[in-house]
Amino acid sequence: MPRRPALRGRLDARLRQEGLLPAAGRHRGPRRPGQVPAQPDRAGEVRGQDLRRPAGHRHPRLRLQQGTVRQGRRRGPKTWDDLKKAAATIKDKTGVDGYWGSTAGYYAQPFLYGEGTDTVDAEAKKVTVNSPEAKKAYGTWLSLFEGKGLHKADVTADAYAHIQDAFVSGKVASIIQGPWEITNFYKGSAFKDKDNLGIATVPAGSTGTAGAPTGGHNLSVYAGSDKAHQEASLKFVKFMTSAKSQETIALKNSTLPTRDDAYTAEVKADPGIAGYQGVLAAAQPRPALPEYSSLWVPLDDELPQIASGKKSLDKGLGDAEAAITKLVPDFGK
Image (tube, rainbow, N blue to C red; front, side):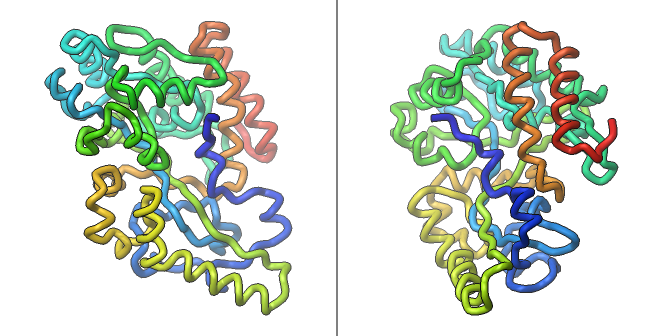
């Protein structure tokens, strides 16, 4: 069943209204000891208070089949144009497609970041999904479904699974995916040798900057519970976010720890985890907007229609803008 990583670790607006206890009972301050520098995702922050403790890091990157890419004599592409050229070369050399993109809104975020924009500007309170920069970004995204070595858009309900299956079976050389799939990739025939899994920073846009959304699993404590339960909950949160706990979880399911000191030698022996740790510098924190992940829902409706040709880019983004405006009614355009 398709996953929605965008909806994980987010602070629901309803919970914000009911009240959550500030993390460790204090206001947000400097980076916590051991915390990964790329982790400061501000979507759990409300009125200057951090309402969650990060427990697992999620960050999509360009996934490569090293063997196929080497045959095509290509390394991780620096720009989207480089990716197109690499895909064509891989197709010529190996016969498989070089890249298969997703039509889900979450996976289009790197294109927006590469143009210096996002679905909204939270600080300016503006909906920017239909801005000139966003149109350029989505235009680049759309262009990666047509051409030699570029797989056509899959707009079916099972698109996520189709892309995953093609990658793990060696039918496509690269996709954009996050660390939550590491263990599933290792089950595929293409990755019996774990070192065949390559991880690269997503390509940069016209600004020369590359970026991908960051987020993950967070633990929060309900402020409406009594003191005894709050103290017990905070103790549990402290345990679950300790270096030892994060190391144990990482070794079991290949998730990325949110603490530097949890990246032990044993954890980094996993090439998938080590690869992701090496590209965290391009992680793009999400804004302090509880509704943020909900903004991908309209895009999940519109982008497949754009990719299939049922709607033009202008029409689809216009409809997405209208839907997003309803989700954040105090935002302008």
